[in-house]
Image (spheres, rainbow, N blue to C red):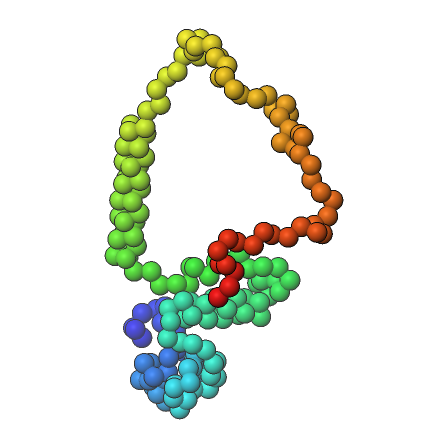
Length: 178
């Protein structure tokens, strides 16, 4: 609004998609305002002064592009050092719908309530009977149980040292012939 005291003429126009912002791109050319545009492969370049090749269709891609642009501008101004990391998270540049945020919060609250109710129901359903160890009967030894290490399966067996000379006996009735 030109009537206000705070009015300033724009010195630069940055657009996400020159196709959707075609009117503002065209009008900026009338008053010699430079245009920087994030351009996809199908973007028109008429009246665009600086085209930055980028994916300008996804909301996360656009948020990342503006994050990179803002970081680079601050680095060129000297506000942010190139050697250190920029502490502003990229998530702040993503558009989040207020209704969608409320819906997600309600869903998370509902899931938390359901999980708490399920955990309470599981805790109430599982009860371990108390066992008094002092009332246990004494151990009764079973008959025929051999102590470990007392039984030797190879005792009294004569195993040959080789397999030579041993042949299987032929089956009775000529079953070996076809």
